[in-house]
Amino acid sequence: MSNPPAPVSRAQLLARARLEARIARGQAAFVRRSRLLPLGVPLAALAAAGALLGEHARPRPIWRRYSRRARREDAVRATALALLAAGGTLGATWIAARAEWARYERQHRADHAW
Image 1 (cartoon, rainbow, N blue to C red):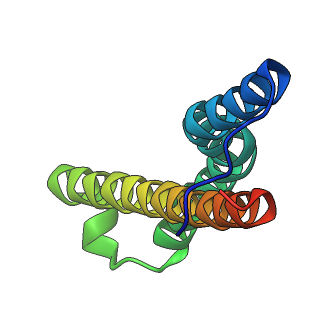
Image 2 (cartoon, rainbow, N blue to C red):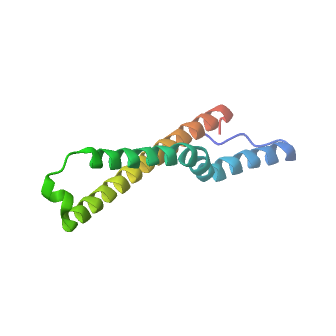
């Protein structure tokens, strides 16, 4: 990658500095505010709800319905499965947002030949 041409005026220098600052500061905000909160959190909640419903929908033997230990184990397993589903969904959304930002940043750099 070549060096960018030197700015000829103070306005160009300030404009370039603003663009660079927006790119530098924008990644965390883009990932968190634009993708993770509006997309990742609802998907994670749906995944957790689906995991809980799927876990409780399967038939259990009669003896597991009335045993305290079995019910506690079922609750722990269902909670762990829901947390795993929510965490996996949030992680996948975070990775996708980072990849999208990297693509956006590459395109920005190519457009401005920096």
